Length: 449
Image (cartoon, rainbow, N blue to C red; front, top):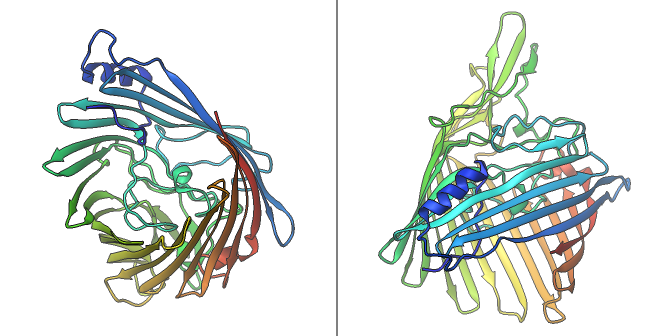
C-alpha cells in the first residue's frame, strides 16, 4: 500500500523518538522507496484596518516552514513550524499567558510582538492493515462551514474570534491516531494525552469576549472576583479518547462519532463567602459527545447533515437561588447544509445551525434554542485565477451577525493576493454584535515555496 497524501499533523514529542518509531514500523528494504527530506512552506502577510476609526488591528507576517521525509514506502515523518510577527500587538496586547494550553503544546514568545510554535510533528506509518499517526496534529471531524458541531476534538485559539481559518486557529494536540479498515468501512481511534483547552483573549484584546454569556453572572450587593482557571493536568488520566466509524451506504457518506473529553469551554463556578465576596473559578468538566454525519449528492445539489449530543454541559445561570450559579444540562446541536453547484464555476451554500439545551430552567444566559443561519456564495473567474466569495452568518435569537466578502487573485502559481472585509452588526450583548465596532478591511498575500 502506498503512503497516503499528507494531511495530518502530530505535535509534541522529541524528533528522535518519532524517527525511531517510524523506522520500527517501516517495512525495511535496502533503500527502496526512501526519499530525501523535502522542505517547503508558506509566507503570508495580512494587514487589517478598522472602518470607523481607521485604526489598524494588525500588520502580521506568518512564516510556516514544512519538512517531509519518507524513510520507507510505508512510513513518513512530517513537521510544520510557525513564526508569527504582528507590528501592532493589539490582538494579544503585551505578553499573553496561554495557561489553557499544556506546556507540551504551548506557543513560545519573543517579546510582545512575536510568537513561535511547533504546529505539526508526526509519524505516519503502516502496520499490517492499520495506519498509525503519532504526534502533534489536528483531527477534523464534521462538514460544517463557519461554525462547529462535531469539529471539537482540537480546541481553538480565539485571538481573532472566528475570523481566522480553522486550520490556523485549531490548537494541535499530541495524539495517537489509528485507522483500521473493517470491511468496506473504516474505524478511526483516538487517544489524546494532552490536556489543552480553548485559548481565550485576555481583557483589553481586540476580540476579548464581553457578551453576557461569557461573563460571570451579577450578584447584587456582593463583590465578584474571577480566580485562575482550574484545569486538569494529569497527562494520562485526563486524556481524551474518541472513535469515528466511516462508511458508504446507498449513496450516502456516513459517520458515527464518539468523544469522551473535557469541555474546552470553562464554566465559572461561584463560591459565596461571608466577607461579601463571591469568587468565580473557571473549571472544565467531562462530557460524552455522540453524533454523526451524512451527505449525498443529487445532481448539482449536495445535502449535508451533522448531529451531536453532549451528555453534560455546564453553563452559567443568572439565578440568585442557585448555590454555584451553574446549571447542568444535555445539549443537542445539529446543522443541515445544502450546496448547489448548478451555476458554472459557482457554489451557493446554505446552512441551518441549531443548539438546544435539553433542560428547561430559569436563568440561562442564552436562549434555550439558539439558531444561526449561514449563506455562502462563491464564483471562479479567469480560468479559476480570480475567486469572489462572501459568507453571511446571522443569529436569529439576537438579530446579530457577520458578513465577510473576499476577492482572491492567483497572481502566479504559488502566489495569491486578496482583499476582503469583516463586518459585524447587532446589539452589544450578542455574540456577534459585541464586535460591532471592530469592522475591518483586510489586504494580504500568500506565497508558497
